[in-house]
Image 1 (cartoon, rainbow over the protein chains, first blue to last red):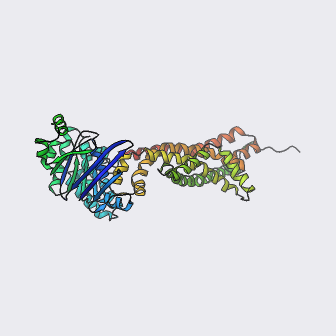
Image 2 (image 1 turned 120 degrees about the vertical axis):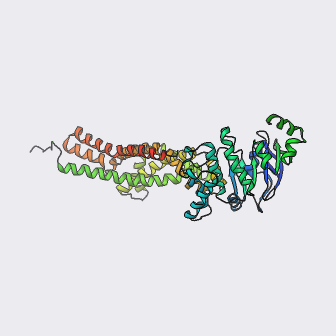
Length: 240
Length: 220
């Protein structure tokens, strides 16, 4: 599903991704952890070309991500991304947020999309909020709308970029529950998070990143209980 | 024989006032309407990341903004004919207002577009939306909200500035005022009425702006 081969990314002189390679199989849930500035969010953003890479190859579902516009658009339509700050469209209702891309990008009929969008919002527990604007929703609700919006494109892969970090603690669970359900339904997911409980419960694989490199990867149990690298130990010691 | 001087305004003058008002409205609707269309294009170009679009747009905006409206009118009405292009009075008035307003409005369009955050672009692009799709469905609707207060302020200013078109003898409100004072010497009454008529044109716009702003604020 995802094949990343030796990518390098620079912001000016800053080497944010240093020779990162990664393979994710269909249906796999991969959790990426690491200190801030380790490049994990950047890696995620590179996977749908919100950030270009300077070297290396990225393949998503058999399509090479390069400067070719058609490829980029095609890949983005297949890859859902959810952001830390929700990034909902504030001038549109929850329903319209979810409907926009299927109607505009996929050019599907509104009536059909509307039905699916309502179903999608129901799935994330927001059937009563379809007509609410983002500003009328709590952070947790907004994030669930954002997840529904990404799912409405029927993506093959979902990227989650610290999606619970901006939420009040009591709202974190409702979002994680939606993500757990998604994982159980067999969605391929790459999740950047600090929620170690979530990682333990649903991750098939945990990747620890530091200073733009993948330092260590393995099952959640292996990483959390028997970390090999000193950096991983130090990091886990600080957050667990 | 002593020359007859009209010492009060009559019904014919009233009709002339209304004609002037009508012509000012016509001038502004055409000139500012066309200006808005051009401003959208130039504003988008100005906000573009492509240098080949943004620099020409910036140059256009600066040249127009930093030269007097009256000179622009003179250039179009008096200078173009010297190059063999005769411009009728009304067309010259509309063209001047169009050119002038497009530059100022383009800046407002640019500011509005740039006020929409990068997060919105990320979200739209992340969903597979292209540049024009994002502009149309995500950025412009939000930019529009930001553009209303300065946009209406500008519009009101331009409506009043349209009085300058009177110098090429287009019979709009201000020209009517000049004609009637020359005829009656009732400058106080005549220009009082002219000013009041401009007020009647502009005041509803202010109100409309407030109303639209409030209505669009839902969901803001």
